[in-house]
Length: 129
Image 1 (tube, rainbow, N blue to C red):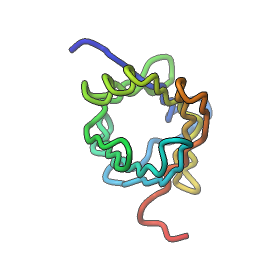
Image 2: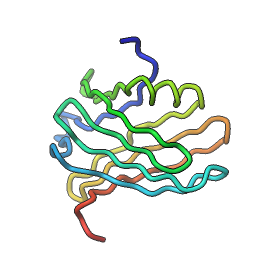
Image 3: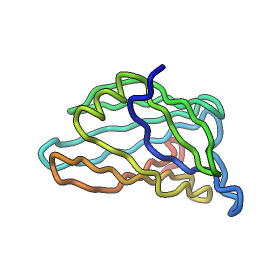
Image 4: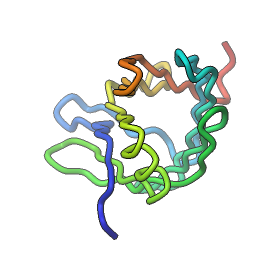
């Protein structure tokens, strides 16, 4: 499969002992993006090498990503539909951190045509506020 797009995810830094989220855990976020509006994002850890991704709102996509590790960093290869859409629309995600105490995943998103950069915090769906 040709690699269309990837976003960096270093969930495991072996030196600092950061953990990967548990298999079966769902993470959600509702974000508001200027000129686009509200966007719902949900991910589920399927295995230690696969996650499912669901986007609902202006962007409606569902798919998976495969996880691999290189130089103590986690990388996600998005499925073709996600990769093509993000590449076409110049959207990039960058992993910032996984907080195993709060069970949250933090990303930075960059949407080049809108000159928009923002943060996304995916929270464990089963943890109440």
